[in-house]
Image (tube, rainbow, N blue to C red):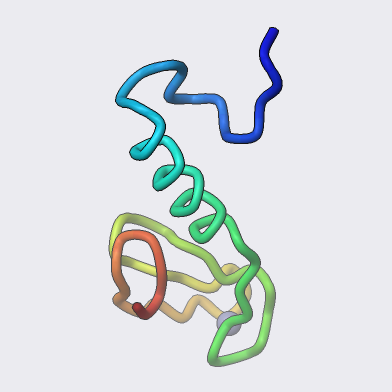
Length: 69
Ligand SMILES: [Zn+2]
């Protein structure tokens, strides 16, 4: 097995540049965020473009991979 620096999921497809970009976006998506309303760390993406807090239920519109660009 080759050494792996990037994520699984895309395998050897699409070329290195796109996989690097995918990895970057993935970690941005999974990064911990604090809710702007209550400060809870349970804030995350509920659906594409919708960010919600698991504690206070706040929902905000954002982009697909981040709250704000
Ligand atoms: Zn909250």
